[in-house]
Length: 173
Image 1 (cartoon, one colour):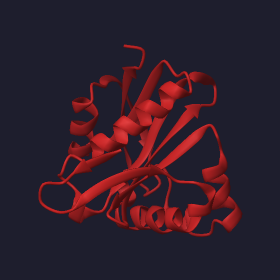
Image 2 (cartoon, one colour; image 1 turned 180 degrees about the vertical axis):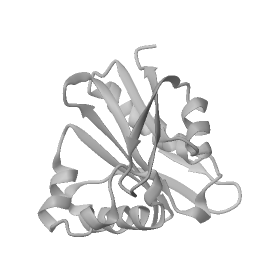
Image 3 (cartoon, helix red, strand yellow; image 1 turned 180 degrees about the horizontal axis):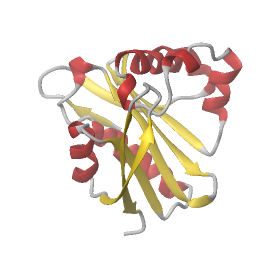
């Protein structure tokens, strides 16, 4: 899957394999360090993961991590997983694009790849959420056809308490 960026180079997306654990670790920790308010985990927790922890995350067949490249440079990532208590539902999570590459419509690549993966896993529904106030995430989610489902007040890993907004999309349509 590729998309041509009109202002700079070509972007491509690929699923990360266990052999890519170091790349995954670098960009994931960067995301957690630079944007701690956007994620359901934190830098302190994941920075002490072992090589085995990182590779296991990429070996697990019930989840997929996708990497976004500008030519050969890794500039983003996003994930999808099968919901543990409902194998017909996919959860989309952990989207991150380096700031200099944001605002170019690249999240469309993430949604396309994750939806394709979820359909291959026979999922009927996809869910995605974001912290209230994350306007760019909200725009991407709604732009891809997800519908608001509910809000829930949660304690975020950065120590703040704020609403998490959840959206759903039927995949068999």
